[in-house]
Length: 354
Ligand SMILES: Nc1nc2c(ncn2[C@@H]2O[C@H](COP(=O)(O)OP(=O)(O)OP(=O)(O)O)[C@@H](O)[C@H]2O)c(=O)[nH]1
Ligand SMILES: [Mg+2]
Image 1 (spheres, rainbow, N blue to C red):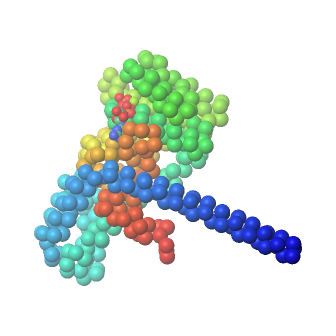
Image 2 (cartoon, rainbow, N blue to C red):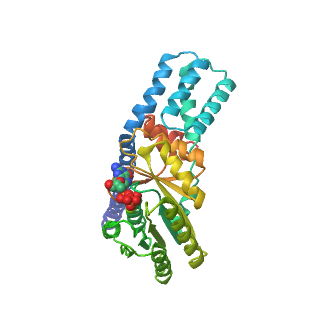
Image 3 (cartoon, rainbow, N blue to C red):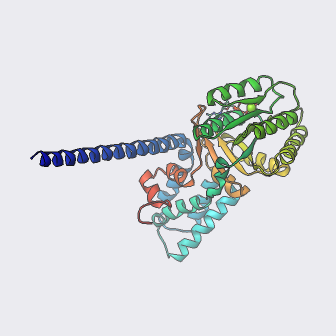
């Protein structure tokens, strides 16, 4: 009897444990789902102006034309270019669309809306290797013209990497603008990471020298360098950049290097021009598109990636420390075209049944 009871109790205990584990598992999935849908709805909200700009235009072309013909293609092309997707990306998107329409013998415009969306998505693949620096010993120089969001991005990235358990150090190599050091120090405080440099008027190259050697001595995982967006003139800025590049190469030759250019998403095609200028003096390894919250020019994400052949690695969607997201082209296109996240998952690489 007691044995039976014992067994029953043991059984019940086991069942209770199982049940508890199930509940934990369900809760964990719920939290993950909530985070995912939270990110997705933030992205969707952030892209609402871009959606009004591009997607409404696209939809009006689809309602205006029921048959696929030259006029339909031309109007569509115009909407994409007006939406800041850039001439070369637009040409590739349209060529791909025409090709598939022909292949599949489509006649009605309604039949090719999804193909258009897929074709836009194809322009923006980000290789997983793009984020290797997050797990390696890396020196990341954050560059770009003034006011685009470099210092904010350094702060956000420091917070993100620190939260992932990385040992982070930040360097204030913008010694030109008064208060630049204080602004970065405030971000260092928020991200709870140490900072080097920050004295106005100091030589930026010597800040980089000190920071790289401190990173080596302290066995730091990731050194983030904030740079000036403006010096006495542009030539100066580019010269200084070259100098910093050389110092890092010389002092820390085997470290993983990233030169991330920060571009302000609200400036549209101007951002492309800036990136080209920086690409002339240094090797760009990635792009951070900031201020994607509340701009109608989000189509620039498509243009930049496709025209420069440099991946957009992160997007800034606000001013707070958590407002930096890895750029996910699938989520971006789904959020833009107002597809449900489920559709995005079904279309995505990890969707069920794939
Ligand atoms: N809404 C929004 N604002 C941003 C974002 N990123 C940066 N900002 C704001 O843009 C302004 C400029 O940001 P900074 O980080 O100082 O830009 P910077 O490139 O370091 O500027 P300089 O040091 O003067 O060259 C600040 O008011 C930031 O709060 C973003 O993703 N979204
Ligand atoms: Mg700054």
